[in-house]
Amino acid sequence: MAATLADDLSAIYDALFAAFGHQHWWPAKTPFETMVGAILAQNVSWTNAAQAVANLEDTGMLDPHLLAAADPADIAPLIVPSRFYNQKAERIREFSGVYVTEFQADPAAMAAVETGELRERLLALRGFGKETADTILLYACEKPVFVVDAYTRRIFSRYGLLPEGASYDLTQRLFAENLEEDVELFNDYHAQIVRLGNAVCKKSPLCDRCPIREVRGALRCAGGRR
Ligand code: SF4
Image (cartoon, rainbow, N blue to C red):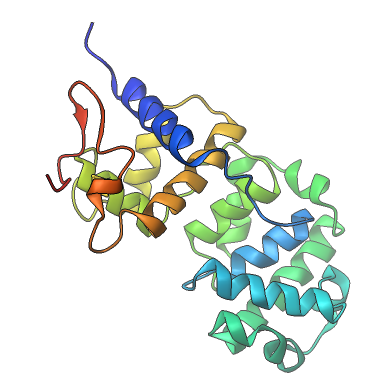
C-alpha cells in the first residue's frame, strides 16, 4: 500500500527526532513567561528574545500584574535585545492587561476557553499575528494547534509537500489534517522544524547534513542538493 501524507509527515518527524532528540520546548518556567516570550520572539532570534525575558525576570518585572500596570516607557529599556522594543512594550502591557482582567492571570482559566474563541481573542490584540497567537495556544495553553513559521514554509516547500509561497493557513492545514491532534507531537514537531531551519535548511541549505534529505524509498527532499 502506498504511503499516505500522514505516513510521510510522521516519518519526517521520526527522522528529525532521531537526529536531534526531543527539543523540550518551550524554554520557560511558567505559562506567562511563554506568553511574553512569544511576543518578544516576533521577528527576532530566540537568543534575542531570551535575553529580554531574562532582563524582565532579573528586575522582578516578569509578573502579569506589574506589566499590566507598567508604563510601556518603563518596559521598553528592559526588552531592548528583542528589537522593536517600543512596539513590543505596548503589546506586552496590553496583553498583560487582558490576561489579568479577562483570565485572572490564571493560565488554567485561559486554557479553559474554547480554542477557536481564544484564538480570535488573541488575534484581536494589537500586533498579534497567527504565529504569536498559535504559539501561546500550543505552548502556554496546551491546545492542539500546529504553529507555523517561516522555517516550516521554507522546508516543506523545498521538500515538495507545499507549493512555494504557501500561506500560513495552507501550511497549518497540511499538518492539522494529516497528523493526530496531539499536543506533545505538535509541540516537538514545531521545535524540530525550528532546529532544522536554523542549523541545516538555511537560506543556503546544508543538504549534506540534512537528516530528512532521504527518509525512506520515495520519501526524499525534492529540493535537496545532491
Ligand atoms: S535536503 Fe536540503 S533543502 Fe531539503 S530539507 Fe534538507 S536542507 Fe532543506
